[in-house]
Each structure stands twice: as C-alpha cells, then as structure tokens.
Image 1 (cartoon, rainbow, N blue to C red):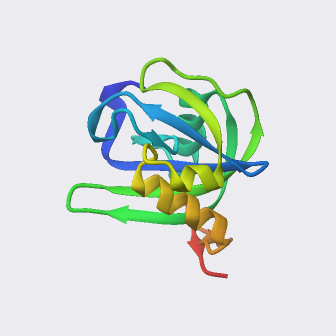
Image 2: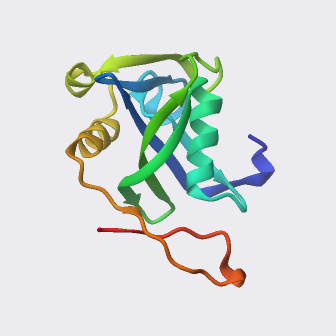
Image 3: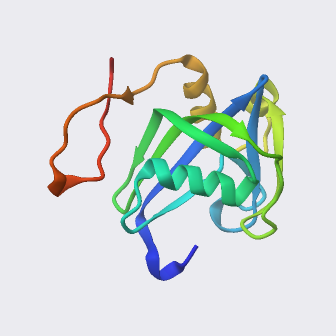
Length: 154
C-alpha cells in the first residue's frame, strides 16, 4: 500500500470462516507482533471500508473474500476500525512475507482458546459466529455523497 494514500485514522478487517476454520495471519510488527489476527488494515483515501477489506484480505493472505455484514466497530480517540464477516470466494492461503509471517486456517474452537490469537480477533470471531450483525440496507444516496453504504439492524 502506498503510504501517502493511507488514511491512518480508518481501518477495516474481515472474519473469514470456511468449513469450521477461520483465516488468521501471524502479525510481524507493532502491538500484535507474533500474534495471530484476522486480516485487515488501513483504508486508502477515497476507498470504501468494503473495498479496503477485500483488498487487505487479498494482499495479506491470497484469499478473495466478500464482506457481507458488519460484526464489530472499535472506536478510540485516534481512529476507528470496522470488522466485517466476509465470505470465502477463492484462493489459497499464503503469507505476504511482510506484514505477516504465516497465514493459516485454524479451527474456530482452537482459535478461541489459543493464547497466540489476539483478544480483539477472538471477540470478532465470536461475533461473526453469533449471526448478529449489521446488514447492508438499500437506499438512494445523492450523487454528492457517492460512494456510500448503509448498514443497519434488519
């Protein structure tokens, strides 16, 4: 990702569960170094969270996934982070050898018990499994505000 186009105040991630296993990447830097986390990253200027999560999952893991619902949003004084449940579309899991040192499919129950899975990732895996989510809701947005998306409890 080009750093000059990075919006350091907005990020997105995806929980991809396939055949009872969740997609995780072992982080190589920062507070999550050495931990297994759900894939995601910063949004680029002008990019929607949905497009960012598609791009980030593909770049970091080699997996194509489609965001289908919001399962969590984390806010703090500096930024926000939206987490989607995403459906597996295709691809083979592989490390990007940059932001992560390995990518794997781990059984959901093992992921929720593993000490090396980040707590936020565990909470979002549980949220994705619960079925509770904000779902895409259709509405007509004016041209001035495009692109937009709306998620709500339906």
